[in-house]
Length: 434
Image 1 (tube, rainbow, N blue to C red):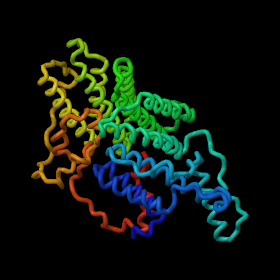
Image 2: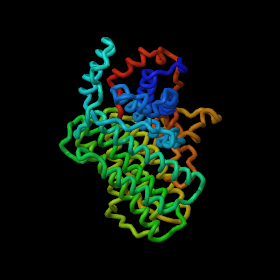
Image 3: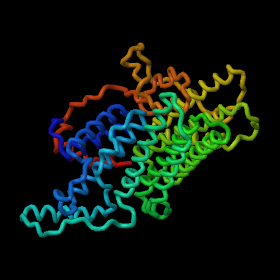
Image 4: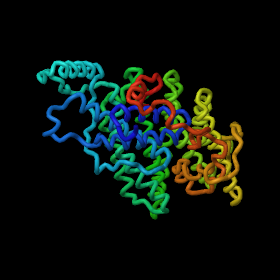
């Protein structure tokens, strides 16, 4: 049962949560990741063994580090995606980052460890070797773990400031940007090498898209300041540049690496495209007082069209992309009506060729239970929209970008809590950490 948490249980709930997040069960996935995280804390995975207890560094200790930081990344990502508080405080974590070691080495060390146990022989050397300088299956998670520490700080500082209607210190924004730049500069050279193995390109792309998304959040939050003029204009420009970079990188990847777009990777592409497109479209609508060429679209118009084309293409294999287009249409219509009411006129050439949203389900009578979307939907949307009315924005939408789910999930069906079944989850063909 839950109170007898083991490493196998943590792995099982982690993998199940990841699987469900990418398959339109965001709340259920979030809950299962939460169970895994609490189990990990109970097992002390967030703490490094004291030197006097640990002895030499072994395979078992490295596996604990890997599991902890994978779980940390997912907990951070879930919290930021849904706009909920992060669980782990960096002040209570001293587990070292995992090493960039080949999987084949783990297999050899595992055999040595098993042999040593069976023969009660402590002389067999199962100490960890030095890390390698080329991509392994752990390379992306190591980079993402370092980034997640920064992401949690950005998330708490800027989203909380917005929700409390507070201002953001420009110096804090600059310091955070420097931390992101330092993180990127510290990446191994193969993160920028075009000739990496095919299997590494997807995980690498997700990590780099994540950094771009954090800069979008950072500079959008940086616009909430008492400073006006040059400082605010700089924040707007940097936010737009990060959004443009995101859209171009994801669109290029989806075009050139379409065979790599499995369900997990396409989900990340949709999420980052969605927020970047939202930022640019809001910029277009909020600049209606500036002269615009009605015939020749601006670079922002072109980039928005590129993003919409990419979402439409992904939508052929992943319905979440189609739902995102629907939400973008609703947001655009809401902001457009607001601008029209205020007597302003704007061009919407980048949006004219896309269909409007059609409800996929029949909404239920309004109750506290089935109107929970007002509290669970991604509050970063509220940050980007600067708190307009979002009533009915997600009405009829089940699955990302909403957190509503189509049907209830039975947490106790089957034998998920059984260690053997949890171990079998590790062999799922669909489970991966991107």
